[in-house]
Length: 187
Image (cartoon, rainbow, N blue to C red):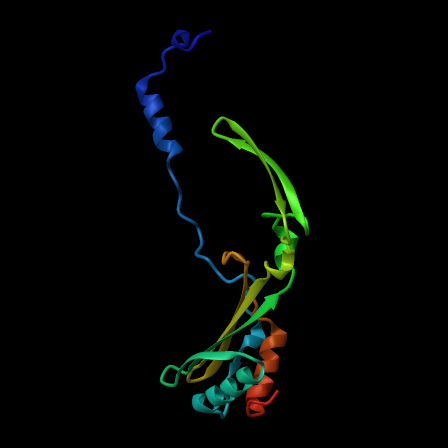
C-alpha cells in the first residue's frame, strides 16, 4: 500500500498530534540536594556569638587546607573551597584519543575518500595529562540562633567539563567542623 492510498486522516487529528508531540510538562518538585544534608550540619548557637563562630570556622577551614573565598560578618557567612587533583580519574571513563605509548596506526575516511596514517613518537601518556580536579566547597551560616553548614563536591575532568556533582554535607564532616570551631579553630 502506498502513502497516497492510505485512508484520509482528518487534518484536525494531525494538527492535534503535532501539538501534543511538542508539549512539555513542568517538574512536580524543585531541585533539592541529594543526599539531604545530615542533621549534624545544623546545631544551636548556644552561648556563642556569630562572630566567634565565624572566627573559629575560618581557622578550622584554613587548617584543613581550604581557601577562604568570602566572609560577610553582617550575614554571618563564610565560604571556602579547596581543590585536589585526582590522578587517573579520566582513564576510568574516558577513551578519548587513546593511543599506544610509542605511536599508533589509523584508518579513516570522510567526504567520499579513505585515508590512513601512522603516528610515530612519544605520546598518549594517559593519566599524566588527563587528571581530573575535585572542587570541594563549604558554606557556613551563623544566624541568631543556629549554625548551618553546607558542603558540595564537584569533579571536573581534564577538558574542563563537569563529570560529577554531589552534596557532601555528611555527619562526620559537620561534627569534626563543629568540634574544631568549639575548640577555637584547631582540629
